[in-house]
Length: 301
Length: 301
Image (cartoon, rainbow over all chains, first blue to last red; front, side, top):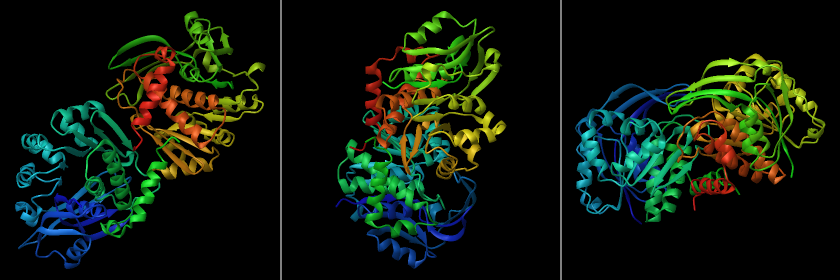
């Protein structure tokens, strides 16, 4: 089966929510993405950690068909993030960021990854995203995440990456910042004119919107969940989307819609506990049951 | 076919939006509701106007199978509202309210209305909503709208009404105010414990949520519309919902879901022009075409 490649961060997170506090948990965009995608397809990870990175974290990822050939281990400490979610937990408040070995990260694609068809460029410097792309021989579908920091600080480079990708996955605030348009329709149509032929807008508790080939597809947020920690919601969503596409092996309106639901399914589980272990523990039945739930809460008949 | 009864306001509105300003337009919750519902079922209106109410407005309503036996014409001026929507037009800013004849409105149900099965209690004093209910012999399905003003100022009476209705249709802010719960699931479950067995939460551009018999149904906002004036969006939505139920003649999970889509269809047209005339001009094909569009933007396959 086709593999999914992800480049992003691997981190140790300290997270506080109204439900508790956890210190130095395994985290980072590439971790949440990988564990999510691994339910659907083999994953190839590209990231960097320090020599302090715990063995049990490495072992967990390896145990889930996640290829770590592209995980660089560098002298120094792993990227650390500390943050808090308050109230309805819509937004992270960053208390501390220690980039450590991540500050000089230069993604290198191992030869064994160069033929990867499904590529996810996680939220890193657009310059590095371009470097990754140049090392992939013939990608079939490239999706990209970004954030306000790059939209405001590296727009030129980001616009260059956008011309070379197939799908952008961002949230509503980023959509407005990147396009200057206040409403969904104008924003998405402006995005498409920037390069990506498909766009997914993440709307938090309101679910997500897919725009592809001139058509829309809306998925709600799953209502019957107990939100404990939203960390990794967007990355696990993206992992579910890309894993599902890789599993189907082709991009059509239908496989994209399935992928968006699979992403929503995975993210809806992820937020019910601290850290990424909930993702690691999901069974195939958990996933197909909730997929069916999503169908039930949106179909008319 | 079964009729729908609506009690609410009939008004003359002066509305300013980024798209323009219109003075003394036909408006009011009962007008938007009636014109919406009339596409699906005969409507019986209960409201009050002054002697200044224009003949062409009366004639428009009569031409749309809207029974005006219950429209009181009282010496004085019709209720007038002046307001403005700015930016993304999420919220109305009231500039002026002249209750006029509406301030002493006592709804009287004509004998010919007493057998109505489908009843919508528009956003008026809960005391009047109770008065209306007591005059209906054997309602099959009673839906209710309310607003912050009554939740904050007449909660005891509102809670009494809630025990006697089948379905509450309110927006997210009202849900939080009425239940004290920050999230959708807790809020809706609290509402159901207050009386109504079904609940519809209006979420503006994010669409709406139906909760019925322990199951959820989510409908998005329609993306391909040009928002000109949001006045009457909620009332035309409710009119589409109740008209659709009356047309089907029975309340099941399926007819409710159809009804929510029909409400969304009607509201999506209503907001594309000032005033309620867009509603009056809709064809059956407009409605069924957009109904199909709603199915297309939510179904997986």
